[in-house]
Picture (tube, rainbow, N blue to C red):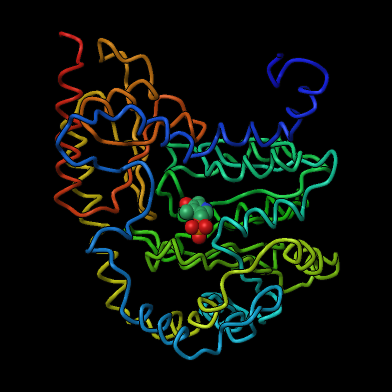
Length: 422
Ligand SMILES: *Cc1c(COP(=O)(O)O)cnc(C)c1O
């Protein structure tokens, strides 16, 4: 008997969308699975996860009681057990519009807000809506691989522009100009940044907006870390420049409220001139969402209270925790010769650090470093190659302080052990 892959009949069963195969190769989850498979089960120390950004398991990052109560009240009210309209229920859309309008020079309307299953679905929706044969999109490098995955799955050509470490990870505007053409549909701006922790100044964002206007390309502003800033630059939403260039603002409650599993995000049209409406983009978004799914009705029922009633102290406490954790990272990294922190993060929950393999005797690159670190020290960190930057490492510092210190000590002893004799 021939195996399934042999023979004409077997061949039929293997056909599939090859683009999806490509996109799993560049996912963070895929890389973390590989690293976890190298963990030493005999190591009795706890595994310390600095590879992905999910602070929710740690008590110190527990969400506010306001969010807990809002969700349980929504369930108990029995008002949110039905199917919900595409784009979300009106009070929820209105509350997101009001929440975002606080930081804008104009007021958003609920019709400009589409609720999504986390920010990830907002990315999926907007990439699908903007794709057409022959089109291309500008994506930052390093970046968030879900953009690459979605673009690839939609046959949208990916053109990467660099973020410049020596310029606080600002966008290489000249590269953006050189890369774009009449088929460029959008530029992705992630601010505050994952993985670089950049928080762009008003002037830089203005320059990006003016460049995009000149080139005739829209901006996809990923602000999932909006307000999670602890450096000298305040968070400025890209929508502030919505009258310069049409902006799609993407966000969620996942990061700021530390509830990524609740899956409540948004895709918002920040375009006071109405160009996107003229182009019937909102109806395309609705059409896409019609074939896809909605965030659960109960979280939609809870979101107005979460956005309106969360006490400032909750946010302040999270910010000061993140600042403290980052300071510890920065101090400890100084003590480790083979890794360097070139630019201290000002926001988000990540730092990018540069790896110098020439100081190590038996480590070939960032992936090798991370695999051996997982095996020998039970610490997971993300190799930069997954984010488009070889021989860099991304560390998440949104974890309880004792575990963070423990992890950094383990990283130091790993580096000492593998150092080339001087
Ligand atoms: C975490 C993250 C997302 C996804 O957010 P969810 O709300 O959990 O779907 C999107 N963009 C960036 C840059 C992220 O870091």
